[in-house]
Length: 315
Ligand code: DAH
Image (tube, rainbow, N blue to C red):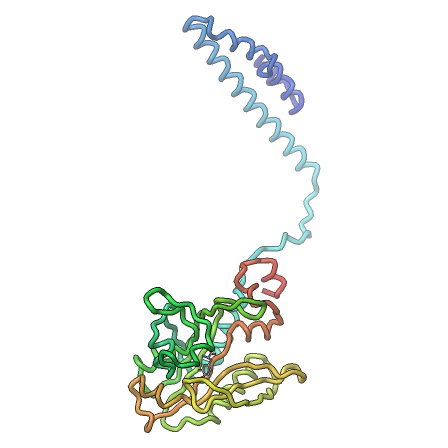
């Protein structure tokens, strides 16, 4: 049997030989069926024989496969000019990418990056922002409450409070982070991202705000010039409050951000004397800006983790 195995030169023959030994009607199978009738020595012998034969088959199979592979390789010509398969490299997520762009611009203007907790207390998310309990402006944001009265941060404005409380004035900062509201459609996700800017010093005016915002938009969208439109608005934490629209591709006015001069109550809440200091704040949807820049239309896709979508979006 050993010789027979050694002399087999292809897998089909080897398989046939294997079946004749170990198959249902194989010679070894028949012997093994008799195992119970044998004495101990004969059993041990049979077991050894069984193991040895299986091993011989296994080794011969590997030898034949190897020989076939070598023969195939000899037949193939190597084309050294063939391009390698494309390498699958990871890239930055569009939001991370846009954050790098946004923060690079703001930092070049002298703003410093801040973050804050996503589970926020009532004081930082609302009350210090001149939105005490029962203030009707709380209705503007569909809030997720924690059982202990804390909230999932509805706005990065909470970060400006933390920054003023801990750093004091003068201060020029921007806060970034996830924000949460109970809403969901193609342009709203229950978790989204905001960026908040704040500049408080002794002589800060609305024109400083408009100058920074215009320059920021110009650089972020890589435009030679940007046309903006300013509409009066209402936010409890700014007075006056405005909304800033940008003319998009020469055709459409798009609402880009809320902003205004920091309300004196907000400064006072952070221990800053509003008779001495004043400043501006602005806040915008970071996802929304990224969607505009990269021409994406469904905010929810940012969070699906679908590599095909990310590739399609150019990332
Ligand atoms: N927190 C506002 C919102 O989520 C956005 C905002 C508006 C932020 C005006 C500001 C601001 O800092 O001055 O709707």
